[in-house]
Picture 1 (spheres, rainbow, N blue to C red):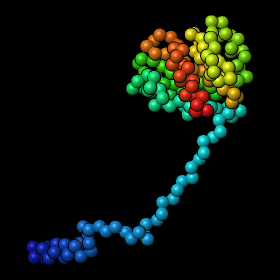
Picture 2: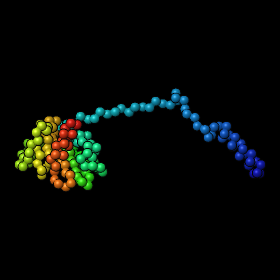
Picture 3: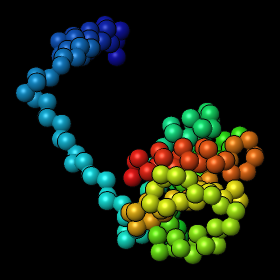
Picture 4: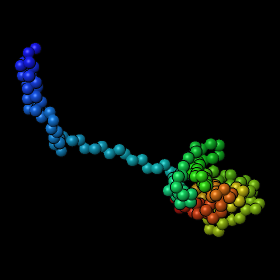
Length: 173
C-alpha cells in the first residue's frame, strides 16, 4: 500500500473516531437508569435456648472487648456443640474474654459443683456466682445462663471486669 493510501486511511479512521464521539462520554438520562432494588433486610432471629444456638457475639462486641483489653483484639465465634449454645472469645497478648451460653437446665448442677469458694454478686441476673477458678456465671431468665471469663495480665479470672462484661451482655439480651 502506498504511503498516500496509508495516510488517507489513517485520516478516515481518525475522522470516524472523532465524529462518533469516541473519546467523550455522556451521562445517561435519568430515565434510562434503573432504580436500585432494595434487598429485603432480615430481622435478627429470636435467640432462645430452644433454638439450640445463641449468638453471644451479638451481646458483647469487639468494640466492647477493646475497652477492657485495648487494641489488637481478635474475635472468634465458636459454634454450638454439646450443651454449649454459643461462645464468643476475644483475645490480645494481655488478656482474654470469653462469653458463653448454656441451657438453664444445667444451672443447678453447675452451681452446686462450683459453689464452694464462690460469691454472689448482688443484683446481677436472676441468680449468679463468681468463682476465681471458674469465672462468673449468670442466670438470664431467658432459658440459658451466661459464663463470663475475663483474664487480664495473666492474673486469673478478674471479678470486677467479669461483672462489667456481664452487665453489658445482660443489657443486650
